[in-house]
Structures are given as structure tokens and as C-alpha cells.
Image (cartoon, rainbow, N blue to C red; front, side, top):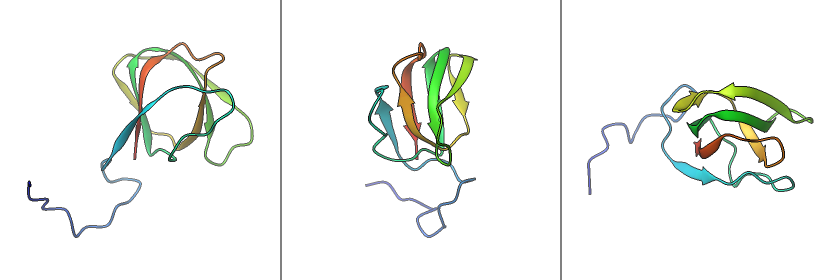
Length: 89
């Protein structure tokens, strides 16, 4: 097992992600965890529900390979053309 020199430091919004999960956009379900950021493998439009929002927002023309620093509770299928999405937590 590798040694983690940062094991005793606090996890915060500005610290790097400690975990991640694949995101399958869904029109009715929320994500398994709220993200610190989203990784976009293949660019396109993203329809997201921000953590403190009550409406979906469209992020147009996201770039392949980008990390978007936004706390998201849902990624919608309708209108999302970006692919290979990963939630960073």
C-alpha cells in the first residue's frame, strides 16, 4: 500500500480531488456525490444542476480534456453532448 504524505491534512474545496467516479447523464437522477469539479473527456455541451441551484444550466462548447471547477449535483442527458465525464470529489 502506498504512503500518503497528505493523509493528515484537511480535505477542502481547493485541495485536489481524492476520488472520482464516471458520470452517466440522467434526466431525473442526481449524482451519487456532489462534485468538486467535472472532467470532460470529449467536449460538447453540458446541462448541469449546480449544488445550490434549482434550475439546470447549459455550459456550451466545453473543451475536450478540461476540468471545470463547479459543484454539481446532477448532469442531465437531454442537451448534453459532452462525453466521457468524470466527477471529481
